[in-house]
Length: 399
Image 1 (cartoon, helix red, strand yellow):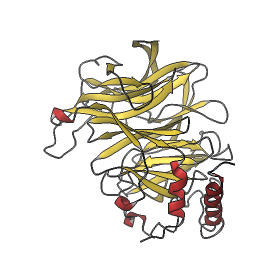
Image 2 (tube, rainbow, N blue to C red):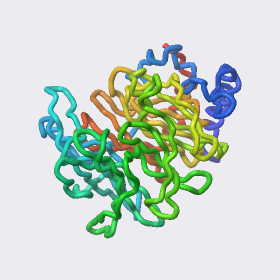
Image 3 (cartoon, rainbow, N blue to C red):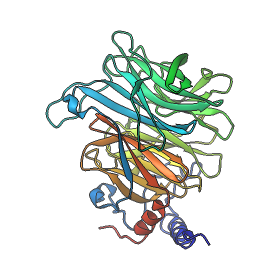
Image 4 (tube, one colour):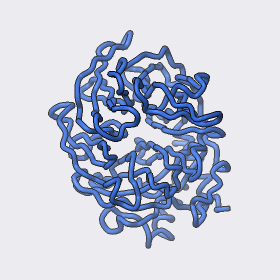
C-alpha cells in the first residue's frame, strides 16, 4: 500500500471541506464568479493576508546549489531572470548576465543596462553545475539581451531572449528572438531569428488544450498580450490583447498562466505594479483569445516575479515573494484546483531573494532564483514534502 495514501486522503478531505464549506459563497469560477478575490484560504490565513507571519511559515526541506555568483563584483554586475529546463539527460540554466548600476551598500544593483548578454550552464542532477557559457554573444552597442526561457519544440531545445534598447526593456527597439542548441558537448548555440517583434515574454510557450502553443507578451508600452501559435513555425504567432498597463487602476505585469482541471478554462496571474501588495487574476474560456479584466486577489505579493507549475498528480504549485514589503522570503504555495491555495511554506530567505522559476522532474521540484540580483541559485525539493506541508497548514490556525 502507498505509505502516503492515508495522508493524501486526509489532505484531500480537508481541501474538499474548505471548498464546500466556508468558501462556497466566494469561490472563484472562470464563468460564474470571475471577480472573486479569493486566492488564499485556510485556518492559518488571517482576514488580512498581509498579516501572515511569513518568517514563521513551515520550513520546506531542500537541497541547495549555486550556479553563478557575482556578489563580489561590488554591485556592478547582475545575474537575474533565471530559467531551468531538463533536456537530453541534463539540466540547463540560463540567466541575464550584465553590468549593474550600484545603488549603495546593502542595495541591490539596477539591471537591464547596455551590454547585458545571456549566460547558461548545465548539470547532471540540478545540484552540481559546470562552467558558465555565453549563449547570445555580445549585443549591439547600446542594446542588451534579457533571458526569457527554454522551449523544447519538435525535439529541439530553443532558448528565448529579448533584445532591448538600454536602459530597460520598455520603449522602441524591443524584439523576442530564438537561439537553437546545435551541439551538446560542448554546448553551442546559433541564432535562429526573430520570434515576434515588440515582445518580451515572461515564460516560454506551453501547450493549450487546442494543441497550439501560448506564451505571454509585454509590448514596449508594457501592455499584456498573449501570443498563440508556434505550430507552423517558431516565428508564427497571433497576438491577443489581455490587459492594459496604463488604463486600469491596477498595473498588471509579468503574467503566468495555467490550464484549470476542466481542460477548458485558463487562469492568468499578474504582478501588480501599482504596488497593492496582492496578485491579480484573470480568466479565458476560449483558449486565450479573450480575457476577463484582472481582479485584485487576497494572495499577498511583494510586487515581484513569481513562477508556477502543475504537478503530475494534478496539484498546482506557486513560488513567489508574498511578503508585501520586501522580497524575503521566497515561499511555495499549493492548490488543489489552481484557483485557491490552502498551504504555503518557507523555501529560502534571510536576504533579498527573487525571480524564481520552478520545474518538476521525476518527483522533485527545482527552483532557480537570485540573491540581490547577483546570483543564480537552485533548490531541489522532493514533491513528497508537499504532503507534510499541506498537513501542517490544514491543522494550523491563524495567529
